[in-house]
Image 1 (cartoon, rainbow, N blue to C red):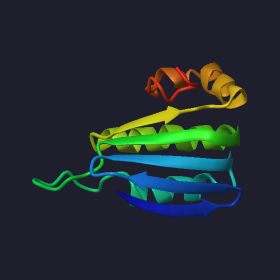
Image 2: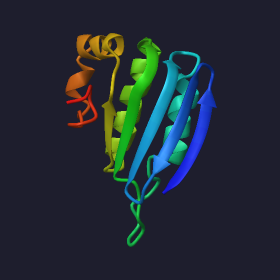
Image 3: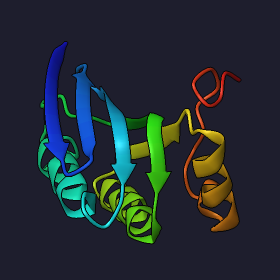
Image 4: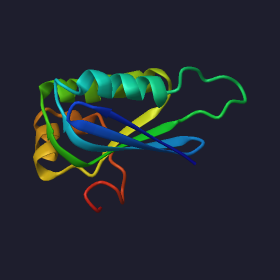
Length: 125
C-alpha cells in the first residue's frame, strides 16, 4: 500500500493506494483556483494510463470529500471531467462522505445520479 500527497491552492490531496483501488482524501475547497491542479494530479497519478496485460492497475477510485468545505461550479466541472476520464479507462470513480452543503449542490446539479455512492462510506450509511 503506497501513500502520496499533493496540494493545490486551498486544497490538499492524500492518496492511499492499493493494487486495484485508490482512495483520494481531499481537504479544503475544490474551486476555480484548485480545479486544474486537482484534475491533473488525479489524471496523471491515479487514473490508469493503460490497461496492459498482466499489469495491476487501479480499477476503482474513491474521492473522499469529508474534509471538503466548498465546491464551486468549476469544481463540479472538475469532478465530472475526472469521472469521464476514469470511465474512458474502464475505471470506476466514486465520491463519498460529502458534507451537507456539498451534497446539496451535487444533488441540485443531478451529479449524484452520475457518481456511485459507496455503502458504508457515504454519510455513514
